[in-house]
Image 1 (cartoon, one colour):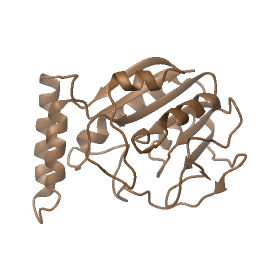
Image 2 (cartoon, one colour):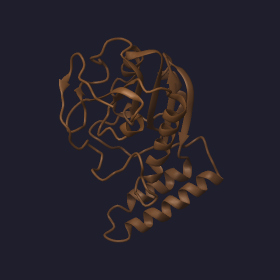
Image 3 (cartoon, rainbow, N blue to C red):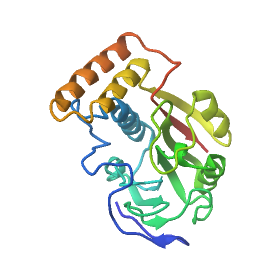
Length: 235
């Protein structure tokens, strides 16, 4: 798997992404991690989608709003190019550019991966149109975003519902919208965040909250309060 520069944009160098702790494992969070209830369901859906829907080893992948490219390992052996794009440093971006005007030719990619970006985008409809433009025919969009979450980052504009995502993604054919974390995951995830200032015992509280949140979500699923959505769509 290689990354490649493309037309336009600016070269970038590696570094930690804003709002993403250097020790945070987005791809393989453990049950003792603070953000397990937030991150684990997203990673599970993305991993399953890559494994079951993306055949072959010649994929051209665009990681739109890539941050530290946490999901890049899922594409090892499956792609000929993996390009990360983000608005600025620090990040692991190969190209610096906003999503509203992507510096790539039409139909340049087979997959666009966009995780936890849409809520920070002042013009998400423009970015969706650009993602559609740079995808090849029958290409796949994998997009995750917040349903309910605390305000974070330098620019935090939106929270989404499944209806809102269907509307803004109208250029695409929706394959699946996955609910990732219901009302109990949301409750216990918030408790984890409030445990952050504690000088001792945080990891134990994270473990308890994660176990209870996971168990109650499975026993009493709900669709009216969702932590995150993962959308799989096709051009």
